[in-house]
Image (cartoon, rainbow, N blue to C red; front, side, top):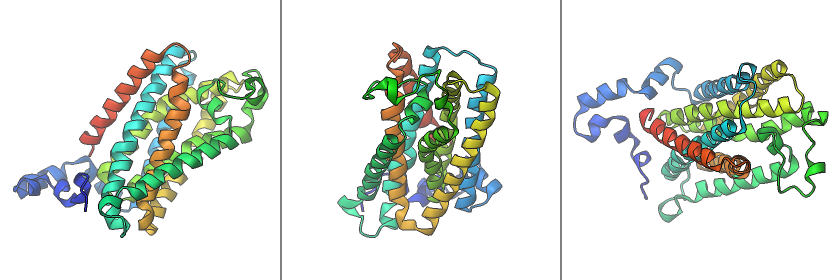
Length: 316
């Protein structure tokens, strides 16, 4: 079996004392760990963990959307930096909390995937997530506008394919829900699948990372809605509702699905990672480089990556 890190022998990493021949010190470390405290409060049921994770990221999304109530006119430079930061957090989280752990647990979940075939289920999931998001983006092209508040430069006829900010069609409730659901499903799914794996140590940094990136993302989407003519206060309330409707049940469903169908876990983790990477590459990064703020966006991305790597160690 190919070993990719701590997931191959998880018991050695849950108890550092065992790894170093000092069981007493190891017990002290594990009792004080964040993961152990989390389980002490919420129990050990992965589905319950998925619910907690969904509530956490939905709450931070609401906080981000509500910032528009007090921060009325953030500059384009600030938004590009914030979105770059969100992209960096998501990018690092996709690798540290989904792809690598997914590959590590594959031999136990999928009997045939061992040796050189160990990464195959996760890689297949990444490709599948990319295809699904690509097709979904084609069906709901306005997702890009609602996320960034800007028109796509690659649209065949931008003036017709994307309504102007003065066009009330942009605020269509049905279109809004479809577009935001498309973007938020990967985030809720990633948290649910992470907890469904039973590895709280990897799931916690992922939950915190997605929650953090939900703050600038929620702010950016709320600004797009305001530009479309939607009332600030009304949107803040609606944003909280759609965050709860989308991210919470998806997180719970993701956790439940991989608990019931364990062989699907590596595929699901790859799918969630692929979908997140698609959103970063197709939606967020290109738009942060279209207004002359490339350096700020890039620095924001790097800060996001560094923060996520720190969280992966501190909370893991």
